[in-house]
Length: 207
Image 1 (cartoon, rainbow, N blue to C red):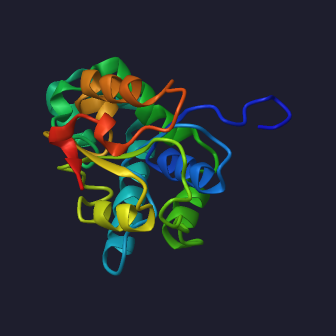
Image 2: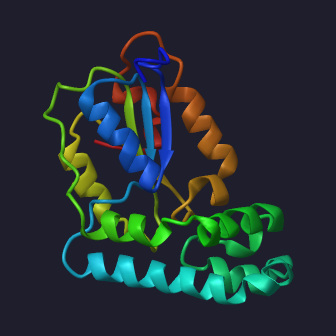
């Protein structure tokens, strides 16, 4: 980041990427951060449920890859294949679903990343007052990958963050609530000075 003059840029991350941008915020090398349904805040039974359910889903995708385009073209197929990740999978555009699911199948280190995310080093938090730029953690109320109860742990670890809830939304807000996700990102990024949590739409902030 220093070599490419990227220190201080605003960042948005989703899922594993959401955990990554939280870590960048903790290290103080980025500006405003939006972290959407970050991994790494599960406890107890949630860890094996996350790992084995996602691992099983990806194995299924690998098995049906030759007919994946036909399955995704059907609303019934999208509903079955995306049910864990989306609150309204039948509404996810077929082209988006196909691109995303193929990326799961063709990522050569997916299994390694998944195991490391579930059983590797735990996410460290940041003490109150240590993050000087806007930080918003967004969470889908119907997330079946990172359960909504984990949002409280994320905010406890990052007390400078505002928590934003997406209604009728699963693990990927940009699938289920794309317009609202864009609005949130634009409302937080690009600010020249640190902004309080109140800069996020008030009806969605949990104090």
